[in-house]
Image (cartoon, rainbow, N blue to C red; front, side, top):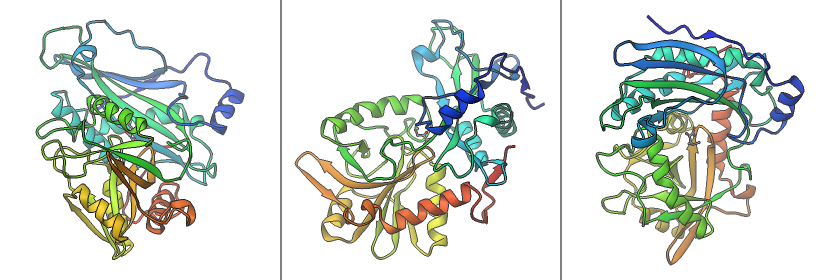
Length: 367
Ligand code: COI
């Protein structure tokens, strides 16, 4: 039987005035709505006790397994307000399935797809007033479903109790600078993931392992780090929080193939489809980092961009490494944002905000 997510409404929700103040300039990931959806799994009972409750801290035993062994997975998706006031999300069933794959890799129970969708619908219905109005720029309600091992037990084995939760956060642009090219540092000292590891799972540990590379990049004046494969340090993988695409002058648009060490981005998969519809030639394959350097130097490589749910499509300008750097694209034209990068981004946002026909059936109505 599926979970019902009954609502216990917040006794003193945020005032309309305060909420409108927050929605006028939400930033990313720092403001939160009044409620959260939760459910519990135990080895004996399976999934139960789905509910939407006032958002607040968890009471967690200091021996909770997640705090020691990082048994945790999460998702990221957005709710968009359309012009007629309705609220939609983009391919949420893909997030539901990826959460199942991530959970399975971390030896956690799978949450049925209908219970994932039910949690999102119930939370957005309770906090609908937090979905930014249509036409307020690139704003949405970012949804963060996550699941963690809440059993108090210090033995190393899959926990017998899990907590599932969804929180919601009104969001503007992920990068405070908006749509301008970011610079990347090639991380050679650190890898994000290794063969047979958890690279394709969306688990907190992967993000933790990307932070030292990110700090190294920042120390070299870069916005983000790009990680290479851990065995040969030759092939491009991803940024840690975003997938990458290279666009050639001849119309090829190339992204690293899914080798098990790269996150299977929903935005990545959607862009491969959109690129085909635009008449570009999408390719998924291993990409040597040298190809990027050579393509930038010869001018054959016209555009590079990163993509993800949070940051949508973000142009990449400069690539730096120990002893050199190259810049892709003409930074004096259109703020350094390539033509295809801008077009793909616009097409994606137009579908998400209901301004373009949803020919692939990607949108799901929430409210
Ligand atoms: C997303 O794009 O939703 C992500 O999960 C990336 C990051 C914010 C963790």
